[in-house]
Image (tube, rainbow, N blue to C red; front, side, top):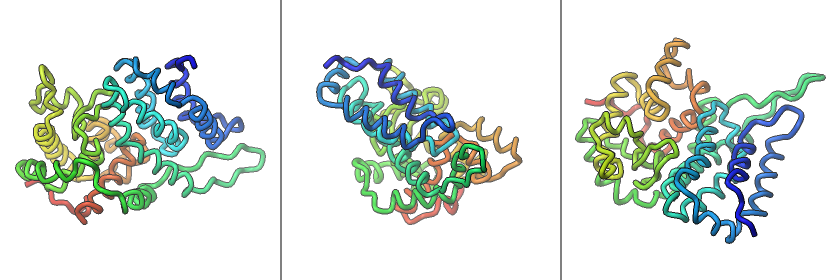
Length: 311
């Protein structure tokens, strides 16, 4: 079997994620096409062909999925669920791409949640003589319901028993609610080796510029990979964001999508809450905040909105 060209895999990722033209093909058909492609091509011999996958190539492949997470229509993620699930173990198998695979694995439940939301939201009634309109985007409350179900029976991530007791004092030392330690479950599933195609790294997935601003060094050793240093920087950044937005859901949204983007949306729409701007945020951010709410309730029995402000 000849190794599959990287362009072919990128095409599957891009084609499965893009919303099809109306009247041409349905999301289910796109999903089925992707599933058939994976069944025909993802076998041990193909996995061996990925042994030469470079970091640059992995970045290009993963960036497509990341771009889909950056889009605003959450339901589009349902179409690439199986592709994402097949890609994660392939990337984890090889040292050059292991960090990217761990990053993707920590986000596989976003694709699961999107599929559940797509089943939850009925198709709108078509108008005579017109193609059926797309499903409306999910509301924040619908996403909360799905995430509560997703997380309700989820076991602790590997590493949580080690890192939670070590890192809660770090958050408390920055005068933050120590329960925010669980942000690492959302960001990296408590694996400090996780690395995003955009360059974020560590338990709390800090971007290079943010890490430098917070006093971390990226060379000769990347201090984001040190759990305590990464947690301390993340705690300081969260304290700053809460000071700017005066609200934990908004602070977390800014942590995920960027404070500038969030502030622009709030000002443009004269909004004051996450729910008021959620549908205009990236798909990942739309799900990131309710996922953290569900994780916090599951792990600590606490409500995100009722966590105290930094002291």
